[in-house]
Image (cartoon, rainbow, N blue to C red; front, top):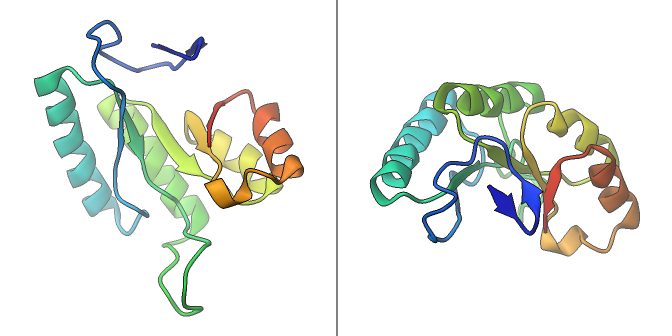
Length: 137
């Protein structure tokens, strides 16, 4: 499907005129939970012919308390997101927070998201653009 002139591989229902649904859990907490949510979203996408991009953060870097849950480990979470992409044949988006994360995350997902409070960091945006992935901000 073309979104703003960019092709997103694996996106179904591109000609239905429906809105693009970007949904999923806030953060990858477990493989089981992520797969249950993905399965439910795919069923809804198919039922209502909604184009779907699965969204989950592999790590939450912005927490209000220093001891808040931030994730299960970057590589483990990214592999789970990649497996969701493969198992359900849907594109996946995750957010990144610093330039080195762009290249790493791009190996596992289809779209990189830059959190709003980081959109003025030129080095982060440049690193994300160099991956060739679609960038959501």
